[in-house]
Length: 292
Image (cartoon, rainbow, N blue to C red; front, side, top):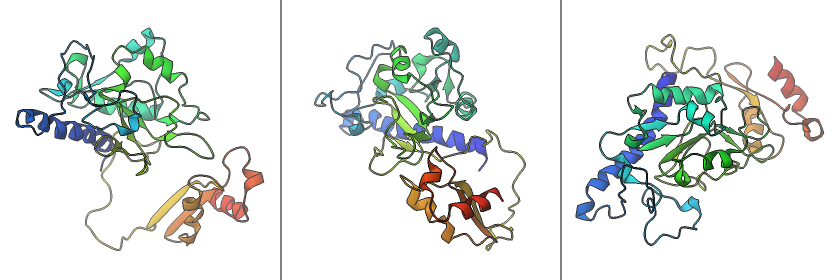
């Protein structure tokens, strides 16, 4: 699958969720989707997205399409609005997204779902870069809560989609620690656990590398479904391993698969400021293989 198609697949997943429920909205007269809520196109959002019997103070982890989404915005052709950078400058946001997030935005803007008219939009995508929410990262955007409050269309995250790859920080990397309250926004997030994924509401996306191209290049070398493959390497992984904390169990076990021939799984302990104090007996050899 070409890289551009992968980005569009994320958007299509969001579109699919909205259309599934939008189809039910059309059947409201038959009592199939009685929870759908109407709204006018002039952005007077009062009462939108909240069922009469819903507790407005309830945690947003209980969000579903029935109580945290305004179907009235999705009548007609499905469209997605991306906040212009110029608008962010006016509200003192003025931060250029990192290249990874810019690729996501560009893929949406170049798709047939994009609209510049917010009144026609079913979904809204922030120009605030939320992909990397690790405070130690150079791409971490600060003061997101105050920036969101200045957006006139935010409305507690209703009908918004927030993209995220990393959250929390070393050594725990708490997946629900975005550094801001996403409210009623749909999370399009990588590495989501079953405990935190809101079924039928959130979207699980791949964890892609920052150098992942937006568009595909030359066609691949695979011409038939031949197995076993004739390539030199069957499986390869190169990355950091955490000597303790979340993710350590998985990456610390990769060396069992490494045979230094067709399966190459190399990791380094060099991560964080205290890795030397916490390193185990394999770190020196692992670091050497990693550099090699």
